[in-house]
Length: 227
Image (cartoon, rainbow, N blue to C red; front, side):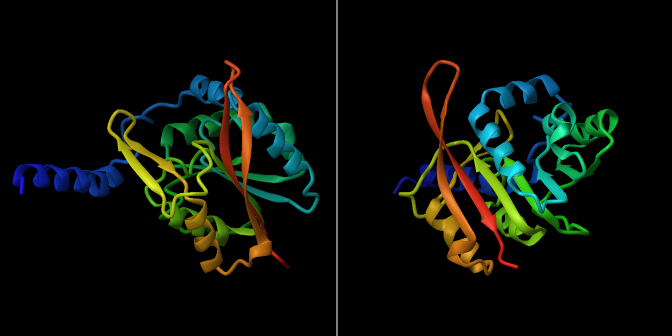
């Protein structure tokens, strides 16, 4: 038995479990990088096109929460989407929220969605490319279900993984956050445990083509609660 090798493995696992969680986002998000957020948004045109069609189809949506609003591509650059709607943006980054507050009249909240207690629920809760990096995927999904009155739309950009039984989480020191592969099986289990029935949600594969013509896939979770 290689004691040193075992010790290194244990230390590495502890670092992912404890140091990673406690320092989530501290280095990477020290400033509001609106150029980076805009470029990322432009690279995922099919997702945003489909989401906007989805939003337009929900005539009964009056209140909206975006989890992980970043520097506000939607509420600032595409604010026309929320005409006659009450939009709220949430992000853990204080610089991001301060940037949004400076450039938009909508409401913004700074905090950790997984840990915080929201004062209200919303007709629609949506989140793009956030669940891919959170430290607790299951709790993130539970909070999504709890905070939406009727609809939720969650995007995971890193792929579509129907074959894995549990989520795969990898901590990266350079970005100071997790890179997660979302298990479809585990996600379904969590949503059912939240009290949803199988006809109240669907998990589907979204095909995209990047700027180089390469095809890649994302995961879309859509929730429609029964009244």
